[in-house]
Image (cartoon, rainbow, N blue to C red; front, top):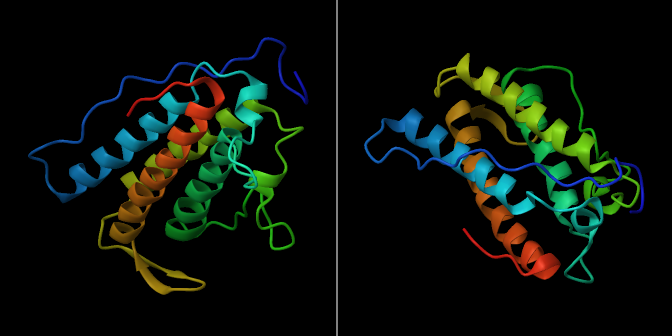
Length: 179
């Protein structure tokens, strides 16, 4: 195994995945789809070793499953904590000087730490969402006034897109496919 991380590391099993409600209101439907996609992503990385998570499987892209873990942690942090909650937080893995740091710097990354960080950011995001209405707004530095509803829909889109990437990456790593 290269880089830090416990010897014999494998990504943990994903939690049970539930379908979004078929007859829910807007909020429960959007939250249901986000949770579905979060769990789908966890299924894409479960059981993989540190080396497998770091593997860049689609050259020349620097994308890896671990890079996606790190990217999604920053996405959750940026939209929910920095955006909706208005906290003074910054990305953990990228910066203006290194905008693709979450993807480019995985060789020495600790997958156990990064998976735990994603789980933490998801939990923090759930808490922020629970304390806001869909019509609540905040000022985004680039797009202006933005609603919680938009952020929730955007995160569904973000995970859905990256689950497609994760599908292809996982298949290249060990041949596993699935939804």
